[in-house]
Length: 138
Image (tube, rainbow, N blue to C red):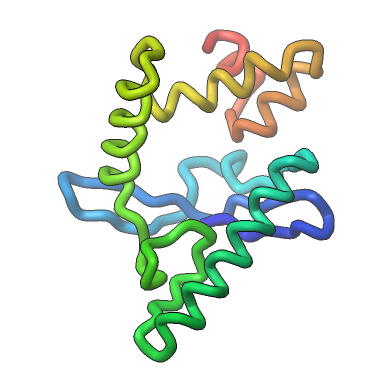
């Protein structure tokens, strides 16, 4: 679960979804370092504000049938997106794009790579790694 603080250009990671087979459970993040606040750039804040407006319109359209999960990205009725379905959609988009295959999780590591020139400790904290060694090894 992510709590946004868009006025401060940040979000806080406070929970995670764990998939076991097709069942999904919400739990605390894996490590103490996984609970964190992540700084957001202006473009990301703009996208999240747009998504918030879109979600509000969907909430209005669905009325009392809206499922208020408190999530930023949901199905159109407000219900939680299934991680497996998000992964399947990502794989279809990658295939359709003609780009080399990449896993959704690999985007995390891509973001870390794009942070070139940023202190390794800052990148490690952004990713929620328990040590700088893990970040440098990956």
